[in-house]
Image (cartoon, rainbow, N blue to C red; front, top):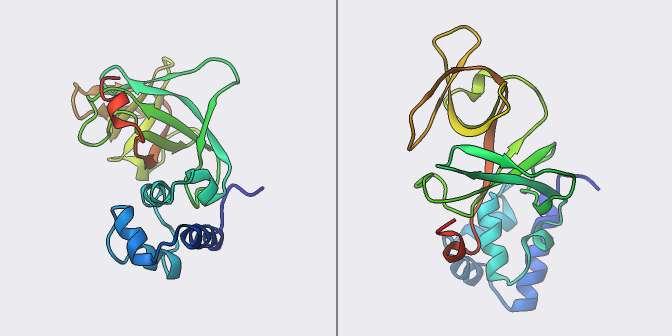
Length: 205
């Protein structure tokens, strides 16, 4: 099965669920908390809907998002916690699986945000997705929120910046001191964020 669900399949899934539930395009947009024309545009012309939009539609339709997008799942490899800085990975081969973002091919990994120290950018319980398909750092990653794996084995969620030493990088945070001139094995920008479905239960994580 392809890791990239076709937008036509997503649209067909939405329309089938709308018919079952008796929604119009406008009423589904309203129930999902979206702009009045969002569902209409998604069904007619939007080619790359965000995971947050599809998640809101799935909730309004009372169906799992994976049923809506019909895509493969992505392993949830750990949590971003301890001040919103360090990604702690699970051991072993058995991982929880979470929905793959729409129209997102390639090797992805998912991390769950823990605690409130990454506010306002990330909420506790949000799931962030990054792509892992190369080593090193691409120039276009500078200035972006990235998962960054260092030579000392640590993995961090930081804003990636150029260091003051050749071949080194500075990792910046919303709520912590910079990590200056570190050696990076790989970095990958945050591609998607899946909003937390149970904000009350994760608020104190």
